[in-house]
Length: 413
Length: 80
Image (tube, rainbow over all chains, first blue to last red; front, side, top):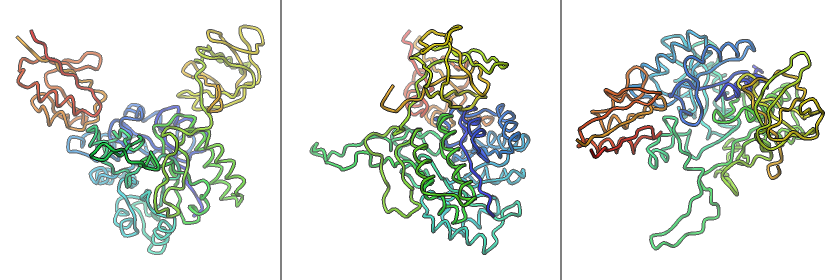
């Protein structure tokens, strides 16, 4: 009853590894084009499935394929192939909204999770979908008390999924929110012919808008980003969310980099563990909020979970409010395993002992450390500049596919 | 003889169906992988190309290119 599953986004092998290294219980990802990040994430191919499942299985981490766009008749063969491959490779479940995908997955014995795109807002709907699905991602617009009512109904009425277990309730815990109800938005389709419901959202809501009347008079509106909500964050109300009976927490962000996945997964892992141990506290929340603020964010709010009447909109600028930024320094060259020394070529800016660095790669994931010592050539150095081959100790292996970044305050360099 | 060259960067297709609606004689949705097929085209490094003398089809082809959400269709009229 007390088990809480933390689900992290994997939009790339880098992000996947970061999720695994930072305590995710499960990961979700798209295969080919039938998912809600068809355009903004690189998306894995059918051939990548084996590797993804292998890496996750080693850590006992569950794997979910997002197959949650609306589907057309010409998509059926691909949809079926993805489900068949999921079954063959041992993927834990598919996340779906279209009834064609749900029905086919069930017919093949593949576990189904109801996507938030299905907009589930009451226990009767949960009961209906329980014929097909074991986990329900509830609508993002519900309040915590509405979520609790649904969880209580599942327990009271003993609503079981196809697995024979009580249906699990999942919510979006952290990440981007959009202005549309459960992501069902037509703005992008109207302006760019690019349907959000086919994973091709052009993010109209993130822009600044001016309101002009028919005489050309511009109207003053207090907030310029009236369609761009701040990012959802529930780490400061996680006790309420978990006390309500939510058992799966999803972090949004398949379009995000590995360091984002590492930081958000680590913070929520710690928060869930603290809640379980009874050590969840305001002081810890402050620490996590500071950490979460270092990576991409549009400012935070609690979404609709506390019953806000209106959304909170992005302030100042629509891009990231991250307190930290990463500056690309160079590419991995060699790792000397016996001595634990990494060699990188500096391709831009410079590096000095004491710098906070981030190393990302498809196998390395996202690793951060403080640079203790630095060598250029055979000599200890105070600085490695563009063109230099530099070496420094790392407690993990690095690879030629790895990229090295320096982490700095967002307004510094 | 004027002609039209049509190119499709097929790999990036998200299967929205617009091109097949706007220029049905040239594009058809694949039942195999849900992406658009440029009929009778030849593939080179991911770009599928076909040339046609049916210049009356230009309008439909251009609106197919315009409506493509991922901008992977190029249509050009060759005057000679």
